[in-house]
Image (cartoon, rainbow, N blue to C red; front, side, top):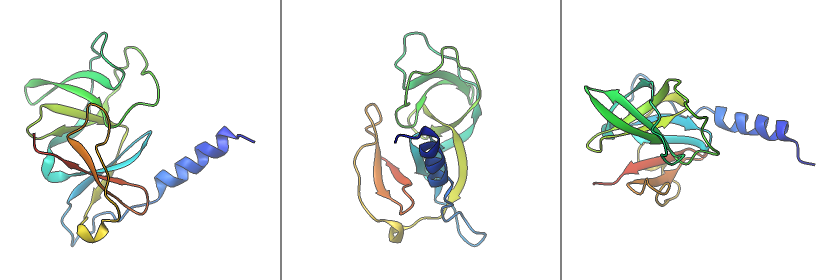
Length: 156
C-alpha cells in the first residue's frame, strides 16, 4: 500500500545521511547543498558568492526561474538548481540560499546549505550527464555513494 508518510520519512533519512564534511586539516573543494530533488556538490572555485537572498518574481517566467535578485550592485537572474517538483507559489519572496556562479551572471537557488566537502578523484564512482534543461553547462561529474551529485561547471 502507498504510504506517503513512510516515503517522506525515508526520503528525509536519505537526505540526512552525513557526507564527509570538511575537517580542520582539509581544504574545502565543494559546497554541499540540497533541494527537493536531492543533494548537490558544486566546486567552490566556480562560485562568486553564496548567500541568503530575497528574490523578486518575474511575471510569465518558466517555473524553474524564480526571478531576479540584487547582488554586488547589479541584478542577477535566479533559477532553481535542478527542476522544481511542481509550480512555485505565486509571489513567493522568502529568502533563499543562492549560489552565484563566477563568469555566468546567474544565481542558483537551493533550499539548504549543508556544509563544505573536501573531495578528490578517489571519491569518483560514476560519470553523469547534463543536469537539466536550461542547465546544460552544469554536468554531473560523478555520484557519491550517499547519492550526492557532484557537479562540474563547463566553460562558457
